[in-house]
Every structure is written in C-alpha cells, then in structure tokens.
Length: 260
Image 1 (tube, rainbow, N blue to C red):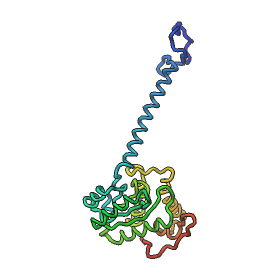
Image 2 (cartoon, one colour):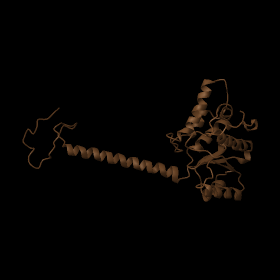
Image 3 (cartoon, rainbow, N blue to C red):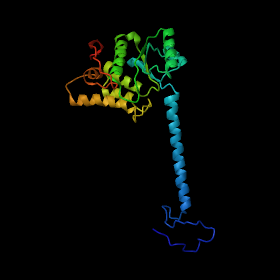
Image 4 (tube, rainbow, N blue to C red):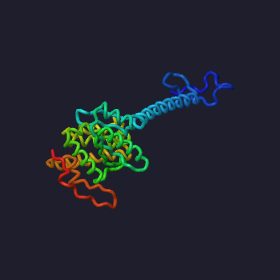
C-alpha cells in the first residue's frame, strides 16, 4: 500500500529531505534515513556478536589447552602444553606416554626440547610422528603414526597416551579417530566424532578439511569394497599412496600392521 504524497502538507521546511511514503509493517511512514539507521544498527549488532564468537573460538583453540580426558579408552588429547601444564597432566591425569604430532622446525624446537625434558625427568616415554594440518598426510608420515600407536597399543603400561598437535583440533582429531577405530574397535562413525567443532574446535574448511578427506577416502574404499574388511592401517598399507612430491612411496613392513 502506498500513502498519499504529503496529504496534510506536513512535509514542510526542515522535514527530512527524502521521505519514504511506503507504509511499513506497523502502518506508519518511515523516513529513508531512519530505515538506514535501523539496518546499520542491526549490522553492527550482528558484527559485534560474530566478533565475540570469533574471539571465544580463538581463545579456546589457540589460548587454551583443549584437553579432553579419554583415559578409559587409553588416550588423552590436547593442544601443545607448556612444561608446567604437561607436568601437571602427567602427575594428575596419569599420562604414561606422549605422542607429539608437531615437528621440530625452528619455531617449534624450543617447545619440543622442553617437552622431551619433562618426559625424561618424569620417566614418561616420548614418541614423535610429524604431520601437517593443512594437507593430506603423506604415506611416510602416517606410517610413523601407526608405528607409534602400535608400540603404545602393545604395551598397556604406556596408556593412557597423551596425543597432541599444536591446537589439539585437526591432526590430534585424526589420530584420535584412528586410535579409537583401529585399536579400540569403535565404529568409524563414532570414532569420527573426534573430528568435530564442538568440543574440539576442528573447523573442516580449507587445509584442515584434509583430515576428514583422508577418512572420506577410506570410507569410499569400504563402500566400493564391502567385503575387504580392512582397518585404516591396512587400507593405508595397501591402497593409500599419497606422498611428498618427488619421493617414492616406500614399502610397508608387515610387522607394522595392526590386525583386528
């Protein structure tokens, strides 16, 4: 419905220069400038809310320990812990081994040395299997992960193992899925809950989505070969050959295969 243009002569000097004569949902005329102010206010409020949520996400993912205790399943997962927090987890959470998924390049070497020193002082075995969080894992990388998990699974005195990367969200999530599925017999759908936004802060976009893509490839293989009955390690050994460009995929020793 369109109102008559200035029916009572109210649009006099000093009135808004642009008057929207279309009746709004409440039945009165709103000036175009007022409408813009409402839209701007809503946009600012939405922006503020998004900012608060983003700050909370960054605080939890980058500033916290992101630690989750699954000792009954033989593992604890977390972000990279400083010496004090790692010592506290070993003493108070019963951590019996540590699996580090972060490398030892220049920006990480100090944290690595501190981590190893704490483990050595407290008599906790330390394993390292470097992975990347922004691409599919190379066959050689995932092989190192399985070698560590095989050793930890074979010796209950090494459990619970503390599995961690940098933020405890992506690489840690993938290895937690593998541990639960291959070594604890959890259904894949249940194990894949370890790669979730809440409570682990895994965001499956851009590079980190590669963690889920790796598992998608495994699921696609199972769907195409329903009688294969392979766990993730067996599938990697026989059918997964993603490797660093220029590097030939190496044979997988039979002794490193964990059979169900």
